[in-house]
Image (cartoon, rainbow, N blue to C red; front, side, top):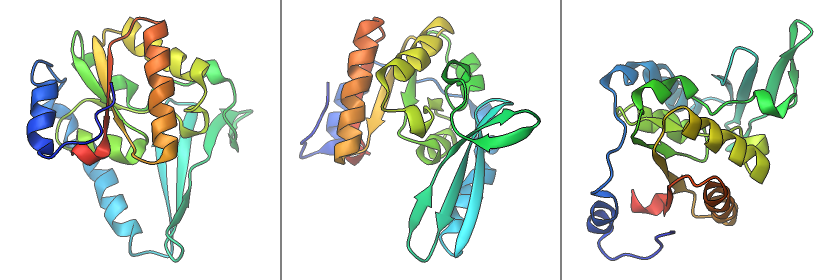
Length: 193
């Protein structure tokens, strides 16, 4: 389900998700503060780098080019004692912030387009995940990550979709992948928030 047009967005959102029990943890709020600070500082810099660790051997480097307001987020994997650009072995990637699954047992969590909105949601205590951007349009990769979340106790998810063409395509792929593994998923646009 993708909600698109509403005159009273707050009411529509509350009506849509009032029956859901979103996973929440006070404990995760402070762990996002470092990233929130970096997001604010990067706006004022000509160049910055933020590292998002997915596992001990998988990460994403976010490069921000302030003068052009562009970013690059290449995935990296640890191979032969060094970090190298590239996805590496796809099956070794887990959802970003996968350790938070412990707070989401038999609950609903949020899924986001990337690490930045994931960290913002976590700063409010909301359990949130995202998948490595480089493969996040690949339906098998999406199924792999959704299956991991399901196997590890997540009851379902709300995907907060970007409202651009890429966001719509990803929402459609997530919806299809979730249906294939019988995983409850609700897709809502970022404009609802």
